[in-house]
Length: 365
Image (cartoon, rainbow, N blue to C red; front, side, top):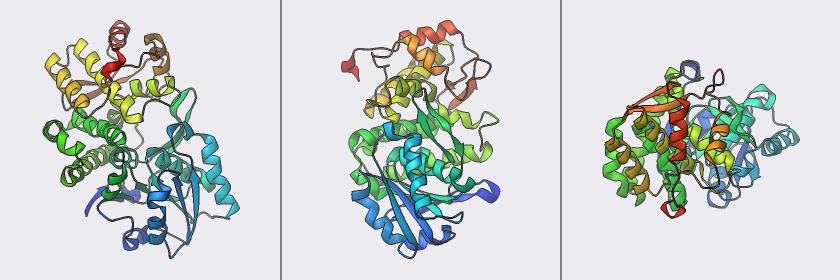
């Protein structure tokens, strides 16, 4: 087992990475402060792992909230179902929520924990690659709104993150690729050696080589933990670098009504668009853009805007973004592979050019 730490002073917590961790009560119990435990999961994950997780929490008084699976259910309505169970079972402020699932379950469970009785503890148990390398770490929680992705939420750090790499054996190929979009992101924003490693080991990752996956997960978590420790609440702009591709990607998800594109797929398109805009600004070479595009496509990710969303709609949706200041969309762009910045130093004409050039025949997806 590999243990990393998210260093946030009194709110610091460990990330455990290894095999067969779901069934290890000695790992989990030190992070549970009282007897009440509620496990939040979905209809896809529950048949696979719920019994194992309940067994690990057998010494506690546990209940389960079972939610439908999918980004379309990342709503206040689903959060209310968690609250109803907490209140019905008379859970108090010492209770612990356990998120068992992907990023949607993790975000919603964390948000419910942040809100219930003004804040209770929660534990992240991510079961998808994307949630293991990104959404389970850092304390961003929330839900979507029909007008904007993740616009309702809170910062609320977990007690610990338990990453059992065995869960990736039941992950379908498309979800695995979607998770790799976030892994590639870390190489691009501040870890060029990792990006080169990913180019060399893409086939091993797709083949689910256990050593390659464990290394990629640990390196991604290490990169993210370092950034979160510097800028927990995204006040200095450092943490915003983790949103490379996300302003474009969130627009695609919202414009698609949260169906048709997985989060990682939308982020992959956004990463390619950010690279193209960076190249138009003279910050990236064409060769670097091709390296980025080639790696995304090598791991079976899309790189073009879907045809059903116009460039004008993309622009409008990008205005509904947490990084907008004084009406200006600030973007994460690249000045080289491994060198990123948060900026509004681009022209509207170049952004529009990038978007209008961002389409391709659907056969290229």
